[in-house]
Length: 378
Image 1 (cartoon, rainbow, N blue to C red):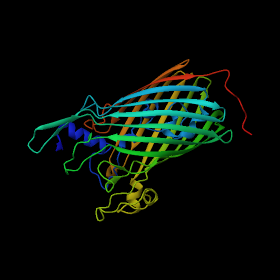
Image 2: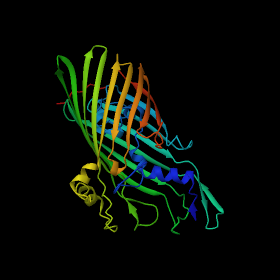
Image 3: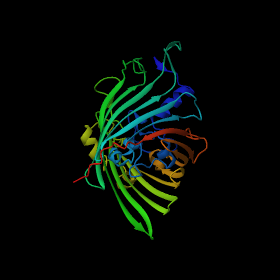
Image 4: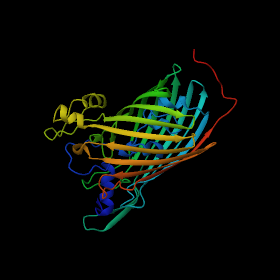
């Protein structure tokens, strides 16, 4: 049996390869790449920067340490992203999350991502249809954030991952298949400090996180396991209050997949989780020059008027040899009392790119309580 490889098969393949197009060299691929898709519209509008931007309801995805610095006591949000919408109309990502501040120094969050890959058709060697399947993947998270000082916090997320791509159908290699399952953790640290910049009140924030540290996934047997997208993220954000009504933030994130680089001369190399993570900083066949190409840089800016209206822009840059994802982003935001809405739009350098015209929508609800415990960090 094999998947029907027409437009649908091509789109499925592109999504599994994180939509890496163009001339590529030793591109790093993983199982469950949906874990790397930006789920919320605010960060997406700033080219996927989020390690050190101001904390909000979606912070657990970008850096769980930020949750405890959210000003409100509790909140929730839902986000929706049509995926590869330029060529398909039934692939989408849903993200729901909520948080609660137990005390001033402690906060928790739960979230779920669900990725629907549309319908695929299975045929036998004679071209006869043998089944239909709707591939899907999801991840369920629980996060905890702790403030250690007035300016510094740590956070951790536990994650369950389920990737059901073939629905038990046999692959083209005549192997029985099964859903891929794994567990993983995220670790994060966050620091911010108020300061004066050119006579204006400002805030400098730093964030670091490691996400998807977890066991490999298999869709067939224990001898065929693939890394999940373990990622290192470093970020900084500078916010300047121009006056009581206007503020602007400039953010920069650097990402590095902590997954072994494919080596054409050694296709049998399959290290353990920890060995693969740490060797990923020096295993590129092309040496130091190729290692540098594995770092992705995102730059974003966010302007707020009266904490009510926001405008966002960003630029995402990935090396031509490592996927060649290069695109501009733009976004809008609105807040009124407990309600908020964000919108993001992606513009790749090539109009024919499958990610062209990608949009994201996020609805936000933030709540406060006069009964919130205001304990003081010793």
